[in-house]
Length: 345
Image 1 (cartoon, rainbow, N blue to C red):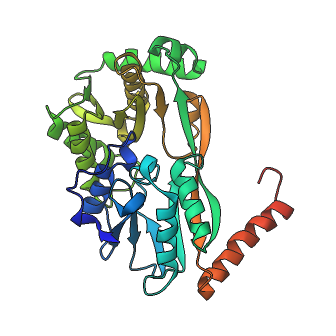
Image 2 (cartoon, rainbow, N blue to C red; image 1 turned 180 degrees about the horizontal axis):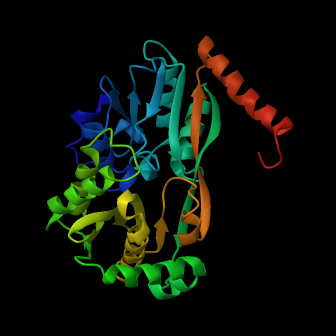
């Protein structure tokens, strides 16, 4: 395995179609969003051990003996970098190397993943072939909307009447307020001010403070550089009250972060900002899909039309007692739920 920082400057890896598993994303996680003592590594997983594809990995000091795909709570989707060039034999080599001493781990996890993806199949097959006991588990629901060429007007007409009425009523109310503005930043122009406004709103919202405060500003800078950035800000009386960070790449809009100032909840500024960004990505960017990324929050069903699930892979090393015990509890627990759980569980 090779240390992450030693190859981040290489240009051998093809660009990803998804911002969340390209080289730049993992580089940003490595630089700005890792706990003290984390060890990061990359493993080549294309033919001939070239760096056309690789698997980003991390180990944490508090979880000795466990290894993870490089991901955290900012990660809506994990995959191999350059997955289309990944090779099943290389993944088997990785699994064998991690199963035997001196590099042995008793457990390896990759999450959250698309269970229909090539990366999921390759990792599952590679670790099975490499002698591990492999299982799957549910991570979260993912709400999304396939656009199918529709405009914002036709999209909105398909949404629940309650949402349409809220948007219309709130837009009219906000337009009458002093100092009201709604901006969408897409480039480096005024970016620092927009990031500062986002941070202000986030810190006044219901959400806990960012544990890695450099990550979101770094993501905004990267997104501006890559032309992914859609950073929306609503102000009332020149005060930022709602903020949302979206990324648009390769025909898909990713809704990354949203927040509003609790003191302005009755204005529905967040709903109005969402509507403006939906309008922008549908009528200006002409995206093919809009993705709410993580979670089954009830409001997402109003904006989206479809749901899918994200899963994790967990592999247990049978050479360790902890690995065998973990496999017993994982697979035994699933069997118990299947036999005695409630319907639909």
